[in-house]
Image (cartoon, rainbow, N blue to C red):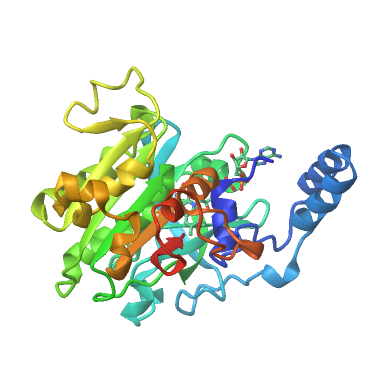
Length: 346
Ligand SMILES: Cc1cc2nc3c(=O)[nH]c(=O)nc-3n(C[C@H](O)[C@H](O)[C@H](O)COP(=O)(O)OP(=O)(O)OC[C@H]3O[C@@H](n4cnc5c(N)ncnc54)[C@H](O)[C@@H]3O)c2cc1C
């Protein structure tokens, strides 16, 4: 079954991506008809997901501060082409509606954006958080049959977009880990961008080390320069604390044009690349590495955060659990000897 990665992630993160409050009747009928044609079981499953769930509805309010309990109207201030099938989009919430509690905006957080046409919401991660003028910048991929992403790609500057949040996706702690490995695929890099930019600009007490392993299908699908360059710069300025490694499944014609300055690894992120990504592993001499147990690092405070397409998350860290809970650790990280408390699937 084709399951949208982020729809699944949203449920898993407790951020029900469906968020169906009310739904346009004709679209619902169209979907229901398709579902019925698919036969008994799938019709029942589809009905569960497609029926409106009033309890998930939230009112719209433009006079009280931004909060997860209601939608706030925001203006689309820019929408520009970023890379193949993706845009950079900036929306502005009236600054007087920003809540004062700064810890609400500690990484990693997202907001729901509502597609007004069909009253469906999806979560998106503001790359740089929110500034004092209420601006939030997003990198958004358009899914061929996706509801909200296609709607967002069609919105024009000056139009209103309703958002709800902030919602915590995962909580950063300054001194909790010696080493963090971030593993992302596609737009799954957005929460890590938010995390890295915040940590390296405003967490002087963090003395650990971070490695970001990011993969895209091809060079042309890599994150745009607006996303990659600030991260590359952070890694250049913090060579002992941050490393960035890019992977592509295959090379395409864009290689050699936009990406001559980037070191790209050909192939998927797997056991060897994860093992090599660890600072502790790079300190081991080659012969000691040969005989050391993979789980040797288990007493160090190492954390893996994984965010990407569902299949990638499963291959790296194991499947999500029932009701999109974390589920058991599996995949490559399990085979390397890591335990559940060392892995978080975003
Ligand atoms: C915490 C969090 C943060 C996120 N941040 C970002 C972000 O910064 N940027 C970003 O781009 N995304 C982000 N996402 C993903 C985002 O929330 C959406 O899931 C994504 O935009 C797709 O939503 P959609 O409504 O367009 O697609 P959906 O309607 O949910 O569909 C998704 C996929 O399913 C396919 N599909 C839909 N209907 C059918 C059908 N009938 N048959 C077969 N296939 C079908 C679509 O083609 C598409 O590939 C985030 C998700 C989470 C959980």
